[in-house]
Length: 182
Figure 1: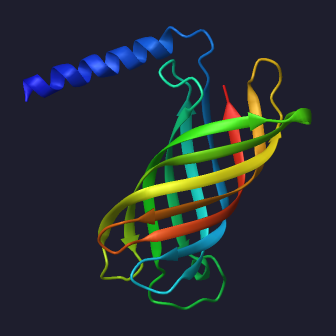
Figure 2: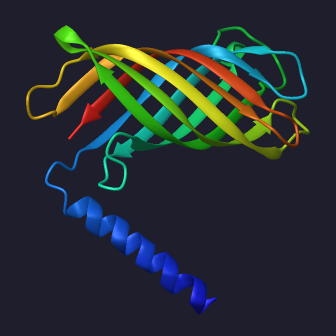
């Protein structure tokens, strides 16, 4: 066990050192809220979706920003008034994506993301399994940040996650997107 801990500590130290030594280190936090659908071993279910993420640039990835996200998608009936159901299906999970961004004139941007996904499938009350797969995202909008790249980016986007084992859980989201860089 000690043989594994030493290389992991060394790798983390190198990443931290390379990140800390870069003068342009930026950390961003943000998320999205919107609608979409989920599916496990069931038909598609209309949902509301939400996500929160943290991202930072590193010297190891100059053109790609790593982003760690938490995703939650639940049956739309759960937030509608006067809905009497015994159970509201949902999925939740985490993903790690690489994000690339293109900028256009007048602060317009386009982001693409691709990464790994882990989803907890709760589409039925007796279903409780983790599934693993990939996630794809596309967002666009307005960059409201100034020259020092601190501030907000807002816009809209889509995200699709699909898994390849257990219940083959998947989700899609059409959402309002926000990101704050410090």
